[in-house]
Length: 391
Image (tube, rainbow, N blue to C red; front, side, top):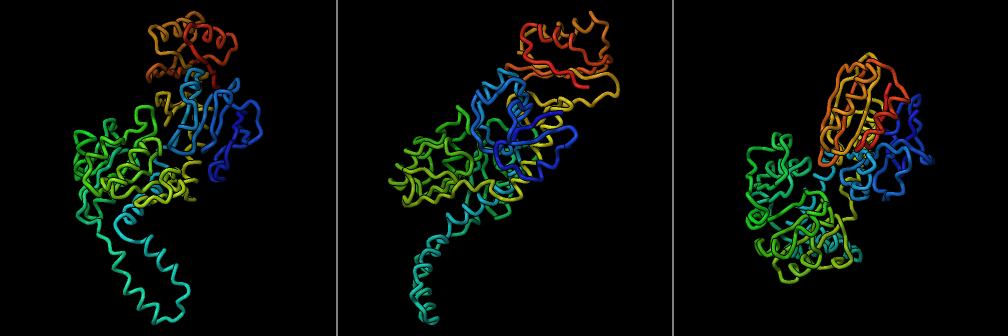
C-alpha cells in the first residue's frame, strides 16, 4: 500500500480517485511515499526517507524546493491547464475593468445610500455617469507574454472580442503552437510586444530567469497610458518600476492578482486577492489531475506533467515486473544497468529511457519477478539515484 500525505485541503473529487485498497491518504503520515498539496510551502526537510513524488494541485511550484528534490530523485508534478479557464475568465474581467469605470461607478453608487428618493437618485446618477465613461476593448491591441495553456486561451477570447492580438513566447512548445490561433501575430522580442500593445497580459512562470522580467526598461517601451495585467506571478514584475511608471503616467493601469504593500490604494492599481484559480471547478480539476498523475507514477512508474523529470509512458506488460530507475544523466549508465540484468540471465521485455537536463529516467519491463538482491545491485551502480521494482 502507498501512503499519500495531504498538506492542504484537497478537493474531495481528487481524493476519491485513490483506490482505498492500494492507497492510504491522510494528513497525518510520517513517512509518505508521496505528498499532495496546493500552496503549502515545502522545505528540503519535508523530503523524508522513502518520499518518491510530490503532486502540486496547481501550475506554479515556487512553494517546492524543486532542485533539492531533484537531487534526491523525487519527481515533482504540477497540473498545467487544469485551472486555465478560471484564470482566463479573471484576466478578461481585468481587461474589462481597465477600460470601463466599473469599480469606480460601483463605489460611487455605494456612497449614495442616503438618497432615498428614486427620482432624485436617478437624476444624480445620470448627471454623474460621464465621470465613469470608458472605452471598448474592440479594436485594441493585446500583447500576450507567454502562450501556454492560459496565454493561448486569453489570446483566443481576445480575438473573439475583436481585439488585435500579439504574442511572444521564446519557449513555445509544439503542443502550444498547434493550440494557438493563426490570427495571433508572433513578435520577435518582448520589447516589440510591449511597444506595440495597448494592453499587455503576463503568463510566464516564476523562475530565476523571469524574476523582475518586467522592469523599467520594458515599461518605458510601452505606449503612454497602457495597461499591464499580471495574473501569473508577482515575482515577475519589478514593483518599484511599476510604481515609478504609474507615477510618471507612462503606465496607465496595473491590474494584478498579487497585492503588494507599495501599491495598495495607489491610483491606477486594481488588485485582487490571488483569485486566479479560486473557483470550485479549478480546485476540482487540479486535484483530479494531480491524483491521477501520482497514482500512475506510484503504481506504473509513468511520468506526466513533471517539472523536473522527463515525461515518459510505457504500457505495462502482463509478465514479470517493472524496474523504475532514475540516475544522473552521465554516459554508460544504461549499459551498466543492462549488464546487471544480463549477468543474472534476466530477459528485458520492453524499455524506455529519457533524460531532462541532469536527470535521466528509465522504465524496464523484465520477465523475472521482484528481487531484493536485484534492487541492491542496481542501486550500487555509480550515479543511480533510486530504484523501484513494481510488480
